[in-house]
Image 1 (cartoon, rainbow, N blue to C red):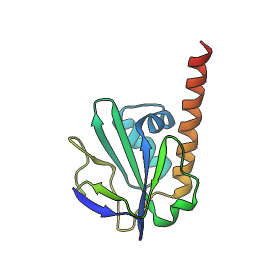
Image 2: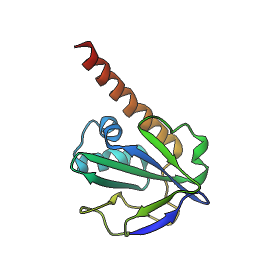
Image 3: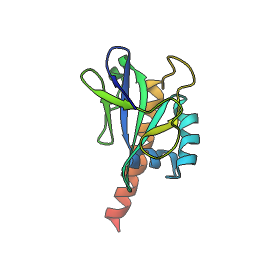
Image 4: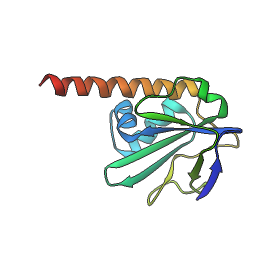
Amino acid sequence: MTVLAMGAHLAAVRLSGNLVHAACATDDPVQVAATLAEMLDGPVIRDRQAPVDVTYFALVGADAGAVGVRSRHSVYLGHGVYLGVPAPRHTGPPGAYWALPPRYEGDLCRPQAVEDLVRAGAQRLDRAESAEVGQ
């Protein structure tokens, strides 16, 4: 594990597992990784803090803060934040690992793609919550 300072060239968007799983319509790690590869086309870290608490980190350029990726399910991590990043070949449990490892130096998720994922996942979660309240 390496700790990187966010903000100068690199940032991350912390995404709740619920949001990502809603956007991908599955919580199966292999299927989530395949869907994220299509949706984000960039590096993503998967971290499991507890049996039911999964968090994803999409790596983006430091200028991504201008894109509307903030929601109650996601947080932009920029200047002043340090992120633990797995070793390049650590692509499975235990601990934090690359759901999608970087393919080359400078490989990052497009901010618009992250925003689209946040929007899609939030809409599905909101619909599910509305359906539960209506029951």
